[in-house]
Every structure is written in structure tokens, then in C-alpha cells.
Length: 216
Image 1 (cartoon, rainbow, N blue to C red):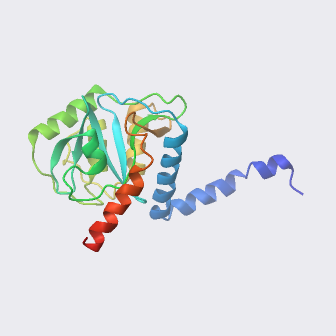
Image 2: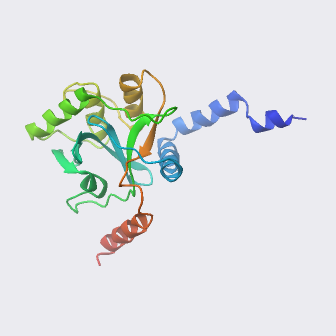
Image 3: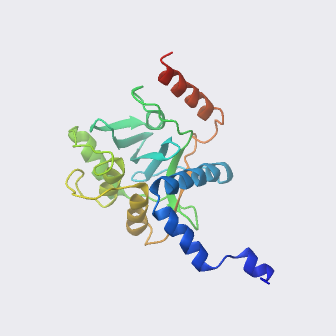
């Protein structure tokens, strides 16, 4: 029979098979990532983002929204309308314009997985600042030209809206952040200080979403 050690540590082939199944099912992969972030927000201490730090917030169980921290409590984001805009941290988490219910209860900052060091760059902050100051609209597309591509282009210090790309997801953003800001090492999303300590927020947001759907 199997030893205890073998039982405690599944073979790499089994792990690879599980990852392959998730890769074939982006929705399941996104749900698992969201669950892991929520658990991480509970067990890990909160961090302070620096200018140029990629930020993430959950919109729903399997949908995320990203942006770039500018400093002084402000975030650059690509809104679903195609507008490039500067918003407060609270508006980044909650939507800010009541147009959509961002159901996430936490804001997450990209950090090094091993050390929890907050990642970011002055170049990413400058690129994001330039983009929102231009105040122009991009040809937004939920899959092909979305907030994650905007965040990634800022991290790469490229020009938002100039890229032609396939489907771009949080996983793609994580690859860019790891390669550009963390020497290829894995990253983790840790909760931003001040947006991590209200356990009742998520139930209130879900109740608000239910009222909106029901028309009450």
C-alpha cells in the first residue's frame, strides 16, 4: 500500500492533471482563485500599496476587476464604458457610480508570494497617470480589451489601447506582473490595509445586488 508520505503528497502527475482540468475550464479556475484570495485576506496581514502597484477587486464569484495604484488613495482604471478614469480606493472597490454592483469585500495588492513584498514600479504609475490624464475612451471589450489588459500595459510601460491581443484574463495579468515586477517569481494578492476589516460588507453588497435585480 501507499506510505503516509505518498498519501500526504500526491504525485506531480496528479497535480498536473488537476491544473490541466482547471486550465480547460477558465470559470472554475477563476472561482478557485477568488476563493483563495478571500481565504488569504483572512489569514494574511494587510499591506500598503505603493505607486504603480497592480490592484484587484472581485466583481462576483468568478469575475475580477483590476487597476493601477497611483498613490494618495487613488487608482487608475479602465471602466466598462471604455473610460479611463482616476477613482478613490473606495470607488474602485464599490464601483463609485452605482452603475454596477462590485460585490468584492476586499481590495488586493500584487505581492511577492514568498516574502509578501508589495510589487509596483514608478514607470507603471506614470503610464497609468498619463492614460487617465488623456481622458480618452478605449474600445472596451470584456474579453479582448479589458481592465486586465490596461493594467498589464501600464506594468509593461506600454501605451494602453495599442495592443492587439487574444482573450486576456487575471492569469495573464499575473504572468506579466511576475515577469516585469518580480523577476519571474510567483505573486500573491494580499488585502490592502483599510479595505480588509469589514466582514459585513459582502453580505450588504449581495443584499443590494438582490434588491437591484428585483427592482426594489
